[in-house]
Image (cartoon, rainbow, N blue to C red; front, side):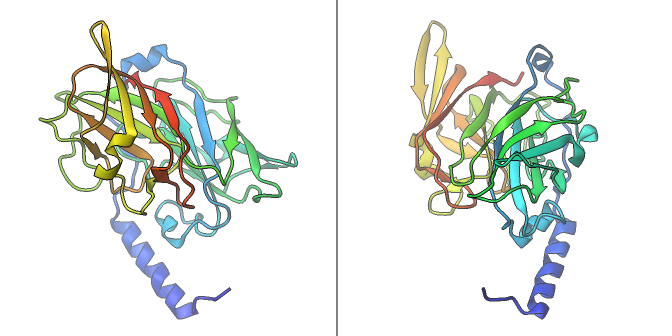
Length: 289
C-alpha cells in the first residue's frame, strides 16, 4: 500500500482541523417536541455496518476518533435528547459472540433541528467477512426527547455489503414557527410551491449512483401514496431538498395536497459511502405534528 508522506499528511490534518472549527455541526435542538410523540413508542429502528476500518480522514469533522475506524449509523424513531447520549450507552456483538464498545458516539452529521434521530458509532467492533457485527443493544439510559428510555432495545445489524434502506419516514408542513432554511446546504423545499414534505431517513448517508447528490434524475424513483379524502393517489416529488449536508436525511417536496402514508423507493438509485446500491425499499410515513 502506498504511504502518504508525513509532511503531506500533516498538512491535510491541519486543513481538516481548520475546516472543523468553522463547520456548524453542533446538534441543533428544536424549540418544541412534537406532542404526538408522547403516544408513540420510541424504538431503535436500524443499525448499519457502513464502513469497516476505513472511515476517511474528513470524518475527523464528526469525531476526532473516526478516521480509519469502523462506522455504524443507528436510526431511532424519535429524536435523541443530546444531554443523555454517551458512548457507553451501546454494546456491539459480533458473529463469534464477542462484545465491543464503541470509541465514540455522535449525532453528527444529521444535526439540524428535528433531525436528531441518527447516532453514528465509531470504533473497532469486528471485521467483514470473518467476524462482523451482528447485533447492537442500548445498555445505558439513552432518552428520547419525549422522555422515553431506549435502554434495553436491540436490533440486528445490516451487513457491510448490503445497500442502504429507508429506516424512517415522516411528513410535515411548514408552520409559522418552523425553522425554515431558504438556501444553502441542507435547505428546505420551496415554501410557496410545496404542499407537504415527506422526509426520508436512510440507514446511512446516501448519494446518487453517479456519485453526485440525489436530484432531478431520481424523482420518478420515489413514489408517495397520499390520502385525499376517501381516495388514495400515488405521486412523485417535484424536487428533492435537505441536500449537500452529508447526512442521511432527504426531503421529498410534494405539490399535491393530502396525507402521505407510504413511500417506496426503486432499487439501484442510491449508494452508500462504499458504493453499495440500495435495494427496493419502503416505509410507512408518520406525521411529525
